[in-house]
Amino acid sequence: MDTTNRRSFLRGAAGATLSLPWLESLAAAITADTKPAIRMAFFYVPIGVARRGFFPGEQDAAIPKFSSNQKEISRNAQIPIGVQPLENLTPTQQPLERVKQKVTLITGMDRFYQHGSDVHAQCASCFLSSATAHEVESSVYPLSRTLDHIVADHVGDATPFRTLELSCNSHRDNKESIYFDNISWYGTGHVAPSIRDPRKAYRRMFGTQDIQAYRNITDLVLEDARSMRQKLGSSDRQKFSEYFDGIRTIEQQMDKLEKMKGELALVAIDEPIQSHLPRGAYIRLMGDLMVAALQTGLTNVATLMIGPERWDTPFMYESLFDKPMSHHQMSHNQNKFMEQLLQVDRFHMEQFAYLVEKMDGIKEADGMTLLDNTIFNYGSGLGDGATHQYSELPIIVAGAGGGRLKTGQHLNCADGTPLANLWLSQAHVMGAKFDRFADSTGPTSELLN
Image (cartoon, rainbow, N blue to C red):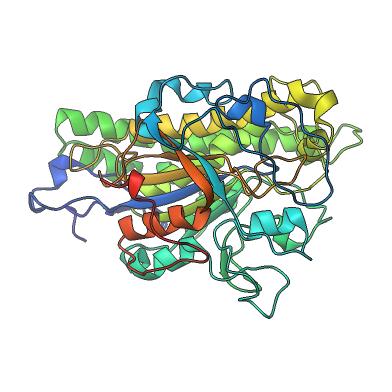
């Protein structure tokens, strides 16, 4: 095994493997011009956002009334079209304050909506696709191969996993179809099933021959790790320890959630057990697994769906409410639940900010951070959960894509700018060269260095 490779593995006696981050002490054979791979990841938030908390200049806008059909609302004319420095963050964006120079807020982008299909289902399933009108004849949804898999067609052969699909929907009451609960698709009608159980994700990433006999994977490779640690410089020894501590923390969090499930199973409660599991802990755990996969080169393309669309089974937002709440039901009555919706939106942003900061703390071979070498997208397929609008979408891009993307700015797009323009630009940064994606009209040049 080439120990200079950033994707090196430690292997324990029972066949357990653990991938390693980049370590400069073991990289003598790497040439000076070798650069880390550019990664792409998505943090999908369902149900849109409460606009007055997320969008600049809309804090005093009228609270939208519920509409069962998709409709557009007039955009905020106070914000000029074009690029401005990202300075004053809105209340929902505030958790990003420490890293705001490494993110870009994008407003004004729209998506195509094909009438005759369910608003929520199309909004989730087509977020990374949105084929042009009636281009897809075999489905009511304008859904074709999604961006993550198209990009992986160009970069996926360099990693053990072409893509990684994760979801934070622990519920099993399949009230809705797969179109409400998946953003990654191999093609029309062919879903790329996401992993929802942290333990299963962990097994897939750090596979063993017998996980039940040896639950703690780091114990299996600890002896090898100690031996290798003696060969490292002081900075790498610290990095090595931090990495192993991080993996152990993931294991401990999984154990805590599993213990909580067992305790809840003994209590008579109306909602499913999963309703009472803390959302933040679950989201951060799945996010930690995604970051570990990107850091160690297990994959360069990942999706993390934070929750399903129009799924009325409640979730427990710890620190916010004293009982499980339904995000979807609240979004349909914003006059009554505006304060709670703003709290949920900020809660989701806190989880995103946690992952952004974590990625920015991981140093890579070129002296940049994992975040600097990643395109990490926050977004939703709806601009608002009450109006079900496909216009004015909430989009944030964190990371510089290896220095190819500008950051620290707010891009407010002209009317009718397709979201697919952003996806086309990011595909180009990832090395996938094609002229058009879905209903794009051209790349978003304002973002490119």
